[in-house]
Image 1 (cartoon, rainbow, N blue to C red):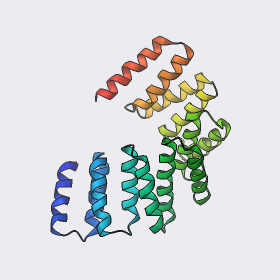
Image 2: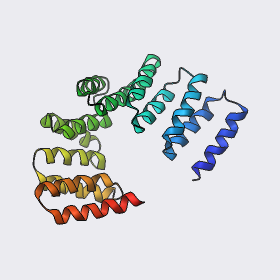
Image 3: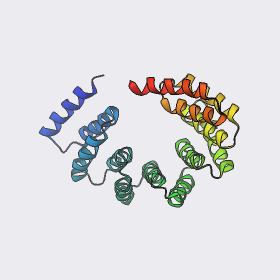
Image 4: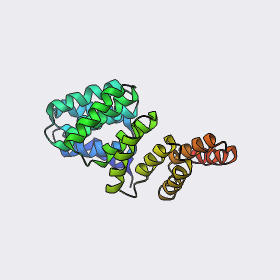
Length: 227
């Protein structure tokens, strides 16, 4: 599909009538499809002037700030969104964005408090379980808890490569390198174009002292990042 062309048509429609939120919703969706976070920030700012009570706009703007590494802006806009959010799913998305932003700012106390708060609202949200688990795994902290969280997520979505990658990273922290690499192989089979799995495998091979296989992973990473 020609998302750029579709977005151009949507902009023309908005130039005629800005009061139809369905059109704004299409624009936000197309910006996400195109990965155009800078434009999304601009468009959601305009959309909020027209529709300050639509939570979806705050969520989209928050995640665009997060992707742009504008973490404080992500926290600020999602806090505004929480002031108007009513739906449980919307509140979860807003708090998840905040938790991720605090995590990137190394404010782990705040991020963990938010993750715990979200799980009280939505205890079987697999994305929340995974993100909380990966945050702990990245820091090599509370690995038993991280493992419990990701095991529940994997019961819900056993073939999700992102979740399998998190499990592998926990096993790496536990120094079970063979099991971690086995899971990363599975991730590569499911989603071969994601460089993250090869990056993680490279780090494990380096830790094991296997420079040859680490170099093989680096070649694959270079190949994927060129595309």
